Image: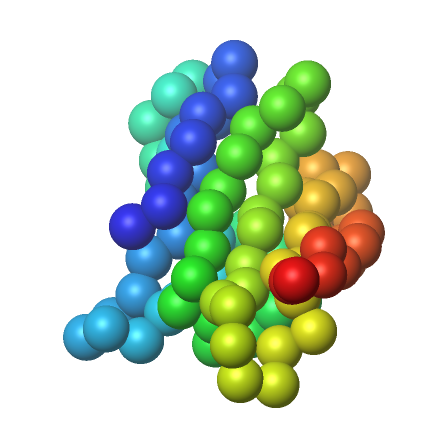
Length: 92
């Protein structure tokens, strides 16, 4: 399970039976409810990390090896409820 929090929300992404989830949930303390947020762009990658920075939520996904071009970076757009791929960080 990967988690991080902003000033008002707590975010988690998890998997099922070892398979990574392609979803992310947000817990809102004010409403005391969990809700799914927009689906991830990078599907099925078990190597992930979620980071909150300057009020933004970022997902880094990618494993070294295989045919991977590198780690993808996605940013969650709160206004449009969607993840946007911002860049790929190459592996060396």
